[in-house]
Image (cartoon, rainbow, N blue to C red):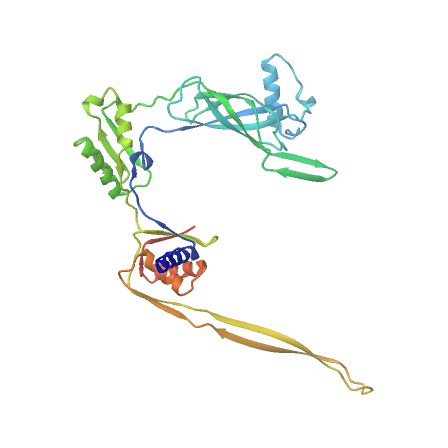
Length: 369
């Protein structure tokens, strides 16, 4: 029993030594690997002003801030001469938001507020009413409210401290939806699934899983799309049909891939990585050069001079190379076990995998991030 426990502990230790993670496919729901085409978000953007700042707003060098502020005041019948405008409690900002699918009039969404000029901070300011436009130029939401930055700027006497980015903030629930984007799903008796990672095998498996429950309803159009005919008895209840489709489980397929992060020494390998027969040698050559300084003193009263000499010494230490031979039937566990057997560090593992790929001995896509 102790031997079995020791063997299991050794196997776990060897796996951790190379910081290697094995990625294997597992059954998953269709909703986790695909989405319904037509169900999408929309980006909104607008130009506005943040007011109420404590002298941290835009300077009088930012013309658009002055012009925008004066324009707002004129809308309320207040005339201001732009040459007299010196206030620094206003900042010009861009306001961005994402309109989620199925949002209706009156719903609220979060907005992000970003300074445009030379404002030092928009902390504590209030965003005044700002229309948010979509790509078609139409207004879909209106934003207004206090801005929260999550940072600060403090300074005195030439010293200055800053935390996070006080020129970018958020206004939770700061925008009210004014127009709905109509999402027409299943109006023509058909819906389509869009795969998160396009793959022919996965698309075929999704179609098969759907057809096992709804005979002949699904067809894989390509590697990234599966078309589904809505059964007649579900035409008036498309939501329930989609919900039943999303809960079906399939086994997604992936290409053999090795992802390497050279900065952290992390290696993630797919479980379907295979190798051909090859030999791996791991070793190193260490060269050390040292330099000693010696001083030669003349005899007393000899009128000689002191001479300083430098003697160099070179030491060469060549470590014993470790060699292993991989069989053509090796799997990913064999690869990592063999690399650990020769004492390879995470950096060594990365170099060896790159060399194996260059030699054509490893059948996988090697991606370095």
